[in-house]
Length: 161
Figure 1 (tube, helix red, strand yellow):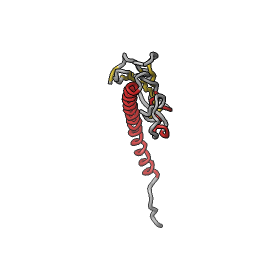
Figure 2 (spheres, helix red, strand yellow):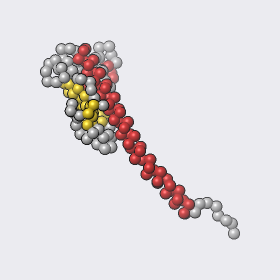
Figure 3 (spheres, helix red, strand yellow):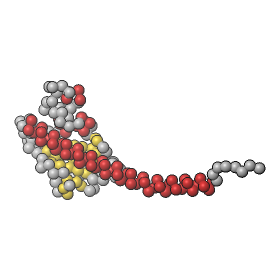
Figure 4 (tube, helix red, strand yellow):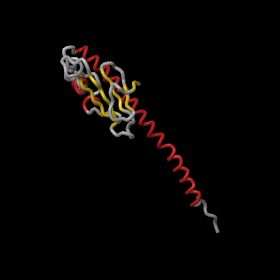
């Protein structure tokens, strides 16, 4: 009688159990690191919006600051020499200005009510709180980026980064 080669059922179960233990340890760390990356991307996008707002108000002083949609522009429009206008300034990524969703965060930016607008506010909130991010971020014409640990809204009373 030949001796059969291979693994026993117990050996296979032990290997599967070890793999499941490793996965149970690694997956939460992966999710936390992805949320941290999304938050870092949101802060970077708010810095880009701050820079674009200052550039816009310098370029179009009779208008002042602008809403998020006016800061961007389609690639086909921005590629031409006459593409940048006050309604499509081509200062930020079109994905950020048109869909306002990037890296798990939803962005808004609005200018003050006066003309020329001397104030603006920008806000980044997680698209799925607890999954894409934990904190909300905001900024205004001061250029200071603030965060709210609750992730729902953000005001000038919140903590600065």
